[in-house]
Image 1 (tube, each protein chain N blue to C red):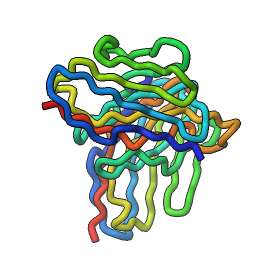
Image 2 (image 1 turned 120 degrees about the vertical axis):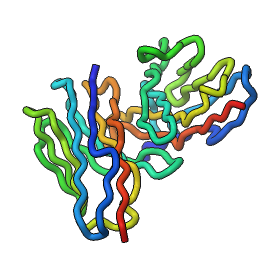
Image 3 (image 1 turned 90 degrees about the vertical axis):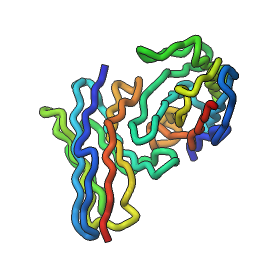
Length: 111
Length: 119
């Protein structure tokens, strides 16, 4: 099965700085990599995703990069704001069968 | 579009009782739904894949007789925690796979979650 590792587990950055969260996956057949933001007690919300045929995708302050060869993908948040504080999960979707989540990163934006 | 409704949002029950959680796709048909469990400050762990009209597929270590899953229609999957114990207290979240042909949006959309507390 798929195994997704995520780091760091916690990350604090000054407001306005950038935040980077990294994930690795084990199964080269995984072909879809979403990132979710989860606030306390709420459902995960999809913030950006990338498919295996794309190397990079950007949506305003959020970007995701994928290195298929190394089986790495990363989330980049620029110009961070207090409302970006949350837990972020990466995930890998294996052949549309099931989604495996990373262990999560608690991001704190320091005003 | 692609909304998943989950009910109840929270439930408290006595040890030994059973609790049913419902997951409904409101504006689309979901042949496949997934049930996750999330303990405090931890990640979402897949418990089982619910398939409409057939038996659920359980992940290793998840007791199928304890966590009963029924997916009798294209819009409803239920998870029943049988003979609940305090260690079953957790946040249970369902999700549904959205057919990209109809929505073109998220591949997986989540319910709001159900917080179960077993006394």
